[in-house]
Length: 106
Image (cartoon, rainbow, N blue to C red; front, top):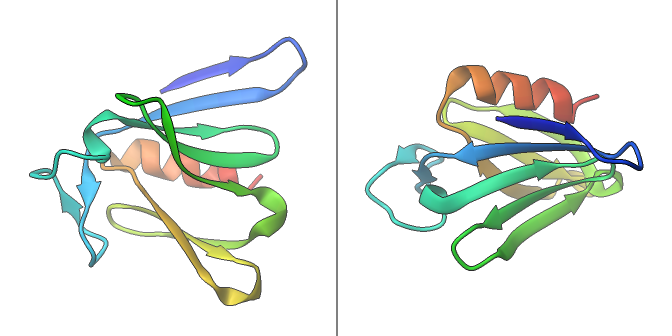
């Protein structure tokens, strides 16, 4: 995990995602993309999930669109405004998952 404050006081937190997640929300380390080469970026106003190999934003959620979070066994489930299920953030390591969950909620 990398935590860095940029010159304009934007907090940038990168968490390497070490596993993919199957449809049931469970870790699936046999899959190649996007979990094996992706990072999550937490800024002051949004959460992004980026595939490193192609430098492609897989998804992003501005905090004003986020209603709630759910800490799951293999990551963090995002719920958007209106109760719409949002993207799932796969984080295999428990310590990193709990830390990231706590900091998204701030």
